[in-house]
Structure formats: C-alpha cells, structure tokens
Amino acid sequence: MSTDHLFDVRVTAADERRLACDTMRAALLSGPISDDDWASAAPGWDDDEHWSTSAWSGDRCVAHAGYFRVDTVVPGGARLGTAAVTRIGVLPTARRHGLLSRMMRFMLTSARDEGRPLASLRASEAVIYGRFGFAIAADGVVATVDPRRARPIANAAPGSCRVLARDEILDVVSAIYDRVVARPGAITRSDYLWRRYLEDALQGDKASFVVVHTDPHGVDDGFAHYTVSWDERPMAESAGKGEVHDVWGSTAAVELALWSFLCDLDLVRTFRVDERPIDDVLRVAVRDPRAYQTTHRYDEQWVRLLDVERCLVSRTYRPGPPVTIAVTDPLFPDNDASYELDASGGVCRTDAPAELRCGVDALSAAYLGTVPWHDLAAAGRVQGDQDAVARADDRFAVRPLAFCGSFF
Ligand SMILES: CC(C)(COP(=O)(O)OP(=O)(O)OC[C@H]1O[C@@H](n2cnc3c(N)ncnc32)[C@H](O)[C@@H]1OP(=O)(O)O)[C@@H](O)C(=O)NCCC(=O)NCCS
Image (cartoon, rainbow, N blue to C red; front, side):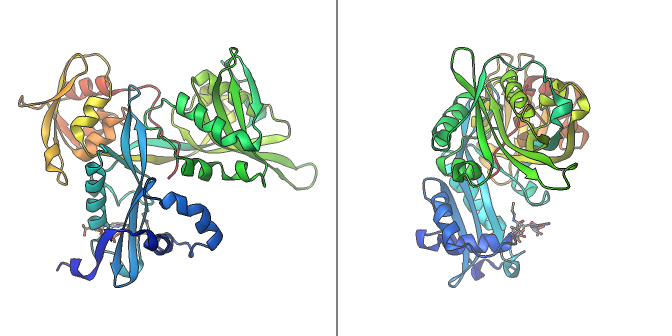
C-alpha cells in the first residue's frame, strides 16, 4: 500500500536547512550540528551551491537528499554539468517507505531540468543506488608509502617546489587545479568545497601544508596538500607520519616531482594516502616497488547518465570501426534508443539494429572508459557478441583511468 500521503516531499526552504542537516546527520550516525559548525557549513547549503529536497511529517523533517552543482571532466577534456548527489539520509523510523526513491526521482528530474546531463555520488552501501541507474565507474585505492624505500623517484619533472603561506593557499591552489585537472572523473571544486578540503591548512592549527611545483619557465603546474605529525613513543621508535590529501599535476612527471618533495621530508617515516587512482604512477616510479603498498581498494565514483545522448556526444573516443548500442532507462524513457558511435567519433541516434544492449546503469559504468565492456558483458549486464564488445572496449578506453579524488 502506498504511504506517499504520510510524507510531504519538497524543495527544502532556506529556514528549514538546519533541521534537514540534522536529519541527514542523524541518519548517518552523527549528532546535531553545533552553532559554530553550522556557521561554516551553511554556505554549502546555499541555493547556488546546493539543491536540496527533504521529506516532512508535519513539522518533523524525516529525510534529506541533495546535490552539489559541479562539472565532471569526461574523456577528451569536456566538462559536463553534474549533480554531485550527497547528504542522503532517512530517519530509521521512516525507512523503507519509498522516501529515498521519491526524493531520488525528484532530484534527478530537477538536475535534468537544470540541464545537467550527469549525476555522480559516493555510496555508503553499494546496494542502494543501482536501482536508480547509478553504477561504479571508477575505483580508488588507499595506499601507504615508505619514503626511504621509495626514493629516488623516477621521472620527476624538472622545476622547483615552494610551500605556500596560509593566506595565499586558496587562490593559488584553486587556480592551479582548474588549469591542470584533466583526468576523466575529476570534478570542479567550489569555494565551499575548497574550504572544506583545505580546512586544516587554512586554520593553521595542525602541521598541514600545501606545496606547489613550478616548471623551469616559472609556471605553477601542480600542488600537493599534506599533513605531518610526530608520533611520540620511546625515542628509538618515535617517527614522523604523513597524510597526503591531494596531489594534482599537469603531467604524471609533475606529480612525481611533488612526491619526490614529500619523500625527501626529514623525519617522516611513512605516508598514508586515502584517495589515489588505481593506476597511480607513483607505484611504478618508486625505487623499491614495495615502498608503495595498496592497503584497500574501494568503489570511488558512482555515475549516472541523465541525458544519454548529450553525455555520449560530449566525450571523445579512440579511432576504430563503428559500434551500435541500445540503451534502456526505466526512469527516463526519453533516453531509450540505439546510439551509433561512428568511425570518426561522432554519436547519433539510429534505427539500425543494435549490436550491444544494456541498461543505463551498465552504460554509466562504461562511460568514463575505465570499467571494461568485456567485464560488464561477462557479468551479463551487457548483451551482444564478443566482437562488438571488443570494439566498444577499444573505442571507449582511456588513459589515465578515471578518478574523481574529491569526496563530497
Ligand atoms: C539508504 C537509505 C537512504 C534508504 O532510504 P529508504 O527511504 O529506506 O529507501 P527506499 O524505501 O526508497 O528503498 C528503495 C529500495 O531500496 C532498498 N534499500 C534501500 N536502502 C537499502 C539498504 N541500505 N540496503 C539494502 N536495500 C536497501 C529498499 O529495500 C527498497 O527496495 P524495494 O524497492 O525492492 O522495496 C536509508 O536506509 C538511510 O538513511 N540509511 C542510512 C544513511 C545512509 O546510508 N545514507 C546514504 C549515504 S550515501
């Protein structure tokens, strides 16, 4: 029996945001937000930054869902308007009444109406979002690096490094990031997101720093954000520890130059890095391959094509013979069509018989060129003959592999 009448699902009004925030926090096992924290969080709930829906039972907020307005880099370098879905939570007392389903339909429709062809998210549990057409499009890794075994690091770009003063961090770093970020899956970061990611370095109450790499012509071409701490134990065991939060460069060699700087920091005996791509170049550039240990691999970026045609025409493809893919999308049937990828990299709808058939979730998995069509076909999520699967793999493949690197 429908329980739709029990809950009012609507766009969250400005004066309802703090209640909605507390509801989301309770669902995610956190207490209510403090006045101080709300003062710094509130800009991240602004209309320009964030679209928000919530569900109400009388004056009680029982659920929340929203998205940040960002762009995602797709293969070839275009940046596509994206609903970066976030802050999803339903109070335990209101779960399994279809509230997430209602909010998700409302939210994805709103994102399409705003002209956003793409949605992406990070999932607390991997069983929640497939039903809405999302799929894992890229994995990430957690790694540790032993700097003494890692150095010297091969192929570091020539140039110099400087550590930024606190008051120049925001402007310098955001400008470099916007200029150099080219990896498929990476997203643009708003002022609010930058302040969140750089909080430690901006506040200056921890040993948290940003180092910038400059090329031999004086152009800033990469940066790393890191935190170091002293682990006080009996003197013989005391050691510095480092955490690396961000490493972005215009080339792999620039990222290696930044890692060289980090691995040369005196006293630091180990680095931990929580978000790296699965094809992290550092792993093959260290002197001793075991200096880099992958401790965990996780589903990083979930993607959902909202406007299939616009997404497909907006990315580039490797040269090769044509392939035709039929897509079904239960949520947005106007996406249901066959799409032909022609030999010159153009994409259009076609009435020709499709060689591959899949749901929008499988296409979303393959879209960033990192999850192979071969694997999706082997798992029964794509139907078609092996030759067409191999052609799709050749045409969609990218290097470097997709990676977002921005948690939201
Ligand atoms: C995940 C969550 C938002 C789901 O909300 P909800 O309103 O209960 O979801 P719905 O009622 O719309 O569920 C839709 C379907 O998904 C299934 N589903 C939802 N959450 C699920 C979960 N965590 N595990 C397994 N199945 C789940 C439901 O069983 C239902 O299946 P059905 O269509 O076959 O009946 C809610 O459980 C929650 O707040 N969890 C804790 C916070 C959290 O993990 N948030 C997500 C952050 S990324």
